[in-house]
Image 1: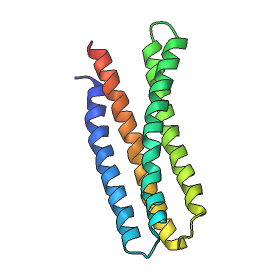
Image 2 (image 1 turned 90 degrees about the vertical axis):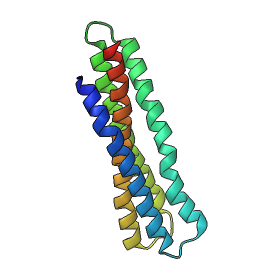
Image 3 (image 1 turned 180 degrees about the horizontal axis):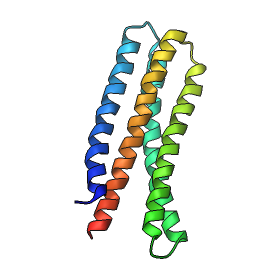
Length: 143
């Protein structure tokens, strides 16, 4: 059994579970407060816009590194670079959401709790992207 297969089995379910949990907890925090609907939509929908961006950046990085680098270890380097891009993409998503939320009129205590769950959401995004990348690498190593 390949290590990519094991990583896929660990990262994908864990990432999906953390995505669901973080989104649910942020929804409960906002439901218990008296925030306006547009603030609620911004807090709950903005992070989901970062997920397709991370997916596109990750696999575009994989493609371009593979096109630039040739040789025996080109796929290993391309997958490593794509994994690094996935982690940085999720980290950037957290900071973009944090900066966007600072402009909203949120209670500082509630904002801190929301940012904590946003950190879990971005960690889940990184795990999901790494799981998809390891699924691709596993299929690549099988064929």
